[in-house]
Length: 226
Image (cartoon, rainbow, N blue to C red):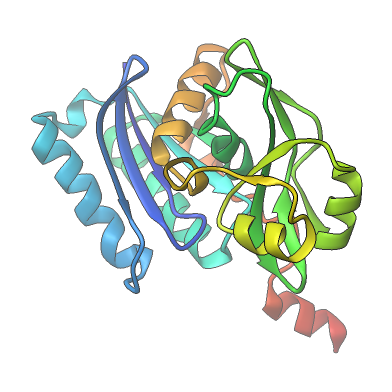
């Protein structure tokens, strides 16, 4: 089974090809270019370097949120197009769950993914690693730094995500930061989670894939304020 996975939920854009839980190719880029500029070239490079063809694909996966509204739309639109073109199923994966999965080798660890949601909030969920599986402790949510720090209650969580440094420095200086290699979005984790979800029947046709925003966009908030 060959899975193509994408993550465009934050500043880092990531692409991975995974075959039967083994990474074939993986690219991540963090720069000033937009995901619409970097995503397709990375996908093309993954296939070219691996010697595989898009016709070899069995599944396409994407981190479908929470995250940047624009980034999520780019990633999901790309997946919809690929699914339509190649008649493939797709799987949407929580960005926060994929971030936590970066630390799946840390048996017994408590994981606190934090994405910077701005407006003094973070996108967050809490997980525990047990026998190489993630045990979800909370749903995905948008939460203030103060409320999250209070909820953690001094427990020994490892913090990851693009908002990890901001959260630890501003609200929870005693917590551990994940190492840089495991801190940011990585499409390999998205692919590995998608394999598990697919095996349990958790896939959809591309046209049914939708982003998970958790809260209104800035434009929607301004409209409602009026």
